[in-house]
Length: 218
Ligand code: SF4
Image (cartoon, rainbow, N blue to C red; front, side, top):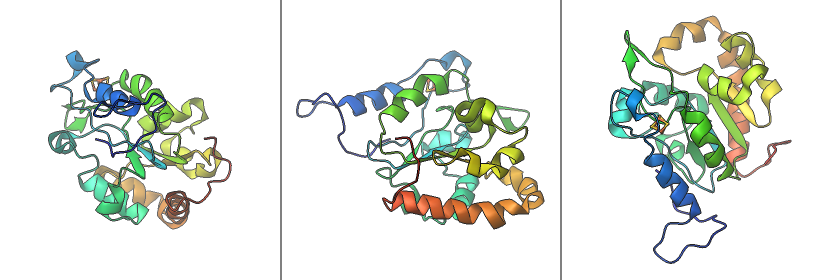
């Protein structure tokens, strides 16, 4: 899913998809790892050439796979609470892009969602990210997003990485996954709610308001 807008370097004929739309169409039609998925591929993403904030999570869960709406589950409710956003604000694709590390639901094993397919992020994140030059901040939610974007810069544990959030600014902001399964983690790491969330809200608010994000590379 994408919002309307044009940023293509190749002007499209009236009625023809522009370069950005063609890229999104290719992502939405991807079948690169279909043989390893439990269902036919259904990539779930929301992008726009005008987006300023990028949210990178893990991969769609079953409910998101069924509805096609990212973060349309209890994890999304908590993420919106962390960000202090309404659903309307959160789903404004002209300002907020949502691209998980793996675009399709990878299935479950022993009651837990499987990891994002490893083929997916290298295939789709570089071109999608390049097509959104207005992104000023990327939220890296959970270990898979942090592994892909931060690589060896990550801490030894997810808590170490999140605790060192200042080290990854201005481009990236690492966060734990807001899954109900992580309630214990959140309880054990009370500094996250007390210290990190206010800073997160402040920086996200500034970026969405069109303010600067000092030092951003794009
Ligand atoms: S998970 Fe990614 S690579 Fe696999 S089919 Fe979906 S979009 Fe393509």
